[in-house]
Image (cartoon, rainbow, N blue to C red; front, side, top):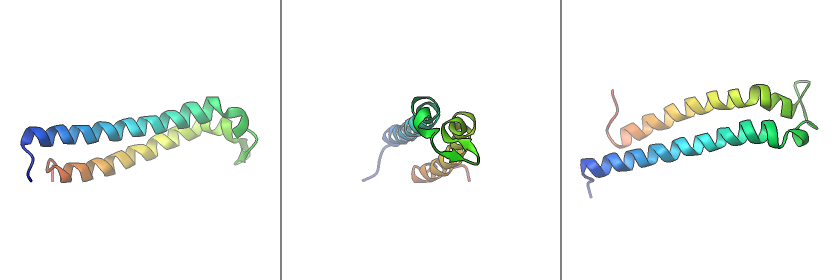
Length: 88
């Protein structure tokens, strides 16, 4: 069964939005949760000589965001090919 162009576009954006919201929720959990909410518990753990909660607040959320950018690009390239909207 083949989808019409409108149905395919709607399915494409639905998957894209689901991916973005999932990644934003993960980033929020890492930056806000690990850096603010659970900082006291995480500070009991040392990471490269620094309390883990401090490290997440200062560096961890940035690293998580960069990794998620690369993951998003990889997933979107696959999604573009799935819905035949890729550029190459």
